[in-house]
Image (cartoon, rainbow, N blue to C red; front, side, top):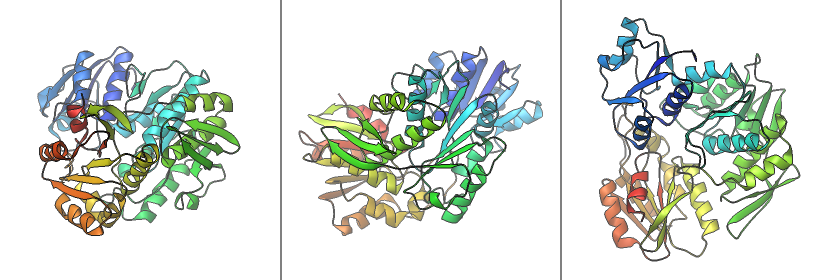
Length: 440
C-alpha cells in the first residue's frame, strides 16, 4: 500500500486525510483529491503540488491511479468510489489506511471522547525529546511542525490519533492503546454509553499486538474496562498560578504552560504512555513543560478592540465546560465572551440538557446556529435558538444572544466587546473563521 505511486483521496480536505496526502507526497507519490468545499487545508495541499478538485465526479480519479483513500463521511454510493470499483482500483477508508500503516511500526494509538488530539501531540513531543524520531498523524495542527498535522520521522515508532466515531479505532491494532476518557457522544452511531464502552473493550481485547493499555483512573466508564495490561493515569496536587499549572503524576512533578484540568489529564496520559515505552521521565517532563498547545485548542489568534481572541475546538458538553473553566482559571478577573457553534443536530439533541448546563462560566454567550456536517444526513430537532432560550432561563450568564448564522454572531460581538475582554470562538465547525477574521 505505501508503495502506491498514484493516490487519489476522496474528502481530501479532512484533517486526517490531508495528512495522508502529505505522507504519500513525502514518499514520492503523485497525489490528487476532491472535496465539497475550499478550505485552508486544501489551499496548503495545492501549494505542495496536490491536484485538488471541488465536487465529486468520476473523472476526478486520474489515469494510472493505483489507490483510492476516502474519509468515512464519503458513502459507498459516491460516484468516485463507484468509478474506482469499475476500474478495479484498490480502496481504503482513512481508518483502514491507518490500520495498515500501523503494522509497519511500533504504534501508540490514542482514542477517547475528549482530548485525543492534544494527548497525541503531547506523546509525540515526549518521544521527540527522547530521540525516538516518531512518525505522527494527529487530528490538529502542531506549532513547529512543517506539515502541521503530520510529522515524518525516521524512527520505528508511530503515534496516531484513533477516532472513536463509527468505531473507527477498531481498524488499528496498536502496541500501546491510550484511552483519554469514555463519555456519551456520536449517539447517531452508538446506542448508549454501554455500547460505547463495549466498543472500547473490543479495541483493547486485540491481544495479537496490544501489549499495554493506558486508561484514566478518574473516569468511571474507563475504569469498567478489563485488561491484564492496564496502566492508569491521574493527576494529584494540582495548582494554578501565573499562567501555568503544576501537578504530580505518580510522584513526578509536571508543569504545563497551557490551562485546564483536562489538559493536566492529557499530560498525565502522555507521561504514562511515554514511561511505558521507555522515555525517561525527565525527558517527558521537559517536553510537556515546553508544550505550547495545538491549533484550535486554547489557541490565541490575535487582538480586536484591545480584547484577546481565542479559537477553541471544544464541542462536547464536558469539553465546553472544561474549556470555559480553563479560561476562567487563567483570566479570573476579565470578562469572558463565548461564541459557540453547536456541531451536528444529533449531538445537540441527544445532549441538549447537558449543553444547557455547560456554559455557566461565560459572562456573555453568543449561540450561532447548528453546524451541519457535510455528508451526514440528519433529522433536525432543536435549533440554537431553543438552546439559547434554555440557557437564558437558567440565569447563570450576564447575557445570552442567538445568532442565525456566523455573520449575525459577528455583529453581536461588535456591540458587546470591550477592552480587556477574552473572546473565545468555540466549536468543531466553521466558527474558527470568525476568530481569524476579526483578529488584527
